[in-house]
Length: 435
Image 1 (cartoon, rainbow, N blue to C red):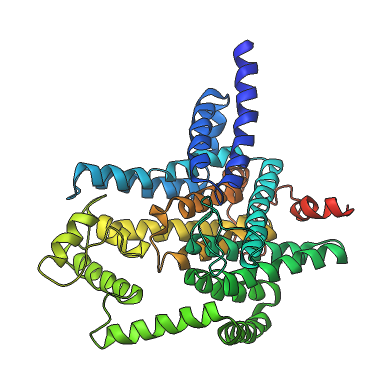
Image 2 (cartoon, rainbow, N blue to C red):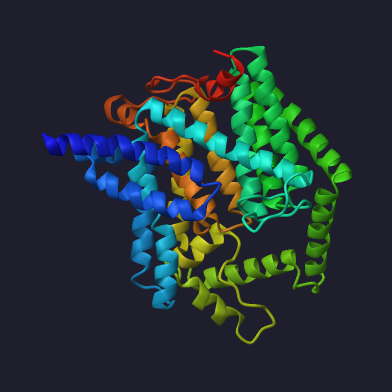
């Protein structure tokens, strides 16, 4: 009896810790580590192993993540890198296990609702501080990353802009579902502030790419093909206004274009864009040499050093493209499994409520587009953001996938779990007297 009471308390506590982790991810790397350790400990101490394993076994996203994780583990057996490199890269990828283990923690609607509210709260705190820093109302401190001209707060400008772009999408979805005019005004204002922060206040170009995909996707989900026409106008308008009115965006875009042109003409290889193009060129050469199984988990550093030996190309530990990194280390097999994970998430999203379906697919677009110019699965914040939000959004899939027959069509979820689309709206609007 006492063990059951302790294990049930551990189960309640670990779910709250999972919510706290959602809040911590955009803010503190150190706190992430502490919370992850506590979550793992209490996950093991809590009751309901049979139910947890049932949730994992019948969740298609968990199965796809497990397949990729298994290939990563196999890759450690034949990696050409040193033991240190194998353990380093393997340890980063091993956190995919948290995506799998956290899915049962978000099985109930209340925990999912609190988790999304925690993400919004953390990013709104980041947004407020970013504006204060940009307006020089917040003094630059050792605890922050940026400056008034590059107003990143807790994380670097690449990370903040990727997460901020997703926040803008979440706020736009909540604006659509808001029950009152006042709530809609609040949410649309937050959308505008988040987009402005990405385009004008912070210098991370990855955020521009993410927004360029999320804006058309949002408008397509809202107005279908008419929305795509609107998206084209909005994207061009935002890009033009941002380019002409924002010194930060103007300089960053011009730098990227000029650096690419310089690289194409055989010079300026040491610029950020020139370096990346060199990384891509050499990475493709490595893939051609090891197309099927790759060079093994953690083998990138050794393989890249061998590839550029005797050339003018500098060394790197990161090709700044997750798809290339996966193909180098795990070959076509690993790349297919990574793409299969994204495909499974996209396909399984049809079983979610309409709102969560859109949020889940926006998460995939965010990570997939960001992975074109970054190796996001070895970057701690983006990796945990992807894993935890995936667990949160897909945590309720088990009852649908395990008990109901197959059904096709995005507009016909297999089983609509209990949902309150205005729940996160209440998180903010309740403080303003809204119901």
